[in-house]
Image 1: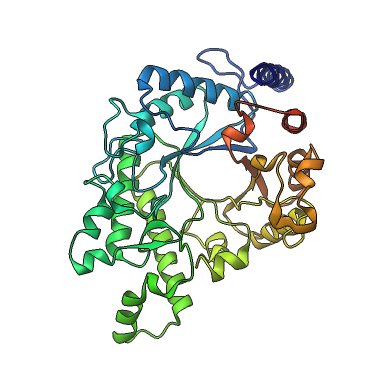
Image 2: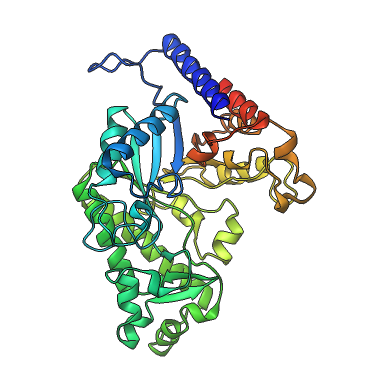
Amino acid sequence: MKRTLAVILAFSLCFFCSCAESSPQQNADDGRTEPQQKEFRGVWFSFYDLDIKEKGEENFRSEICKMFDQVLNLGTNNIFVHVRPFADAFYKSKYFPWSEFLTGTQGKDPGFDPLSVMVTEAHNRKLKLHAWINPFRVSKNDNFEKLSDDNPAKKWKNGSKEDQQKVFLSGGRIYFNPTVSDVHKLIFNGIREIIENYDVDGIHIDDYFYPSTEKEIDDIQYSQYLNSGGALALDDWRRANIDAFVSGMYSTVKACGKNVTVSISPSANINKDYSEMYADVEKWSQTEGYTDIIIPQVYFGFKHEKLPFSAVADQWNDMLKNSGVKLVYGLAFYKTNTVDKYARSGQNEWLESQDIIARQIAEIRQKHNYGGFSLYSYRSLFPEETNGNHNNELKNLISVL
């Protein structure tokens, strides 16, 4: 209930103030005490959190200020905001249409620039803002007619046979083909314009690489590769293409000449990354030129049968030994008070325990490669309605911050 939420916010504010008194770090401009910056503390803001249909700049700014204040008062120092959840944009772009989550209609100008507002308000609070994009995901459904006419995926679908190969359908969604150089170029151009036009602190992508192992995704391109003398097996060829994309993205960011970090948030299941998404996260974590920060989505409880939290966290910690890449753990606050059916015998852990996230943070802080944590997501931390389990999980989280 809203009254309960108000109590939680008041509690978190009091906690933040008490922490500040014990270890002050003053803002010279306004005297406001800031959270310590040594530990990376992040929160993801998905497009669901930023769904503002027809609210206008004044209302959007008001809501963003409230949201950013809430996470700041938890001691957060980094935020990931969805600026291109599909082939659309929360900013004025030369390459992608305005997002439907701004007005209800893709391509419709909301009359202001949401990313500009978010950058300003984040930096007013000394929060680092990472622009979060999903590079290959085009749409949450498979209907090209729902895309605006200026959407590059729709243009390609209605173009030549060669252009049509740049997009494909999988699992009821539309994707860009990750093997096509024109697709890479489009995404790099979109990243470049964000960095050139906005004072973002980072570029962030998550785990949308190959949506499946279907042969049809890139059958034409792979056949062309073999016919030209290529010798790699399909799986290795796909990984080479994703490596090239990630490396090219990193180079694009660094070539802009600004102090912008690159971060990637892959699935925490390393085997699945490698064999199903064709993402060689081990290489990216150990080789210069792919990412600055790796944020595995360790979205498991301690009692998960196949992927228990402690074992997975150790696997990532060991993998980044002697690496220059920063390890930040992604944690699943959204599972609070839910049944995790994939955990099998441990499926009720998130219902029965109310301090899982707090215990996870306490554990990973002991690891030698620990760099911080990030919580998914804002709406799970501050839902419109709360219950006893959520309140206690948040209270226990606050106790370790």
